[in-house]
Structure formats: C-alpha cells, structure tokens
Image (cartoon, rainbow, N blue to C red; front, side, top):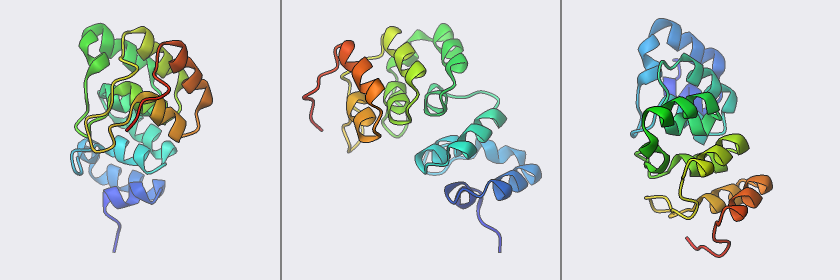
Length: 157
C-alpha cells in the first residue's frame, strides 16, 4: 500500500512525493484542509520538500513564497498587488508571520519595509504576532529586526 501524497509529504518521503507527481502532476495544486502541499511540507518541518514543491508550482501565493523564503516571488507579487503585504491566508497567518516563523530574514525584512504590520496577530486560535512566531522558532536576528521596526515586545497571545 502506498502513502497518500500528503502523508508522504508529512513523513519527509521525497522519493514518494516525486513518484506521485510523475503520475499525477496536478497533485502539486491539491489542497488538504485548505493548505497547499508547499504549506503542508513547511508546517511539518520538511523544508527540502517544501522548496522542491515550490519549484514545481507555476504560481506561488505570497504565503507559500514567505514560508519557503522566495524573495523574488514576493517582489513580483507585491509589485502586482501591494495589498498582499497585509493579507491573511486561509489558516489565518500573514506572510510576515510565516517568514518570521520559518526563519527567512531577508523576506521578513523586505515585508516590513513594504509595510507589513509588525504587531498584527494571526486570525486563528493562536493570535500570534510576527515577533512571537520568530521567538517561538528561535530566530533572534528576526526578533531584533522586528523590534527595530516597532514590534511590541510585550504583545500577548
């Protein structure tokens, strides 16, 4: 019995992910609970698979680009629609929070300079601000950058 596509992603089985994509390339656009394969991989700590899947996706969302550290995609998306800097994904996170959590300093810094709200909390049960996401994941350089740009060090979930 083979793994489902999303199970293979969660388990970090890149061979199986690639095998299933060969037989059904449309899987790269599938959703599970509103999340793309790129986001499922990122949330399950499978950064290699997330990056691989991002490379297979024709058009990344700003959230996928932030979670995988793809600054060129962020630049193009914001040039086309500057309002994306404060948009929320289906799971309630903003691009800045995702970049902070996944440790993509250059993306986080660019989003802040582009006007991303540094004290805006996620629209989900966590109610996490970007500084909390960076702190939870141990990204001190991002925390320092957020503080320099007015992040509230006392914000609460």
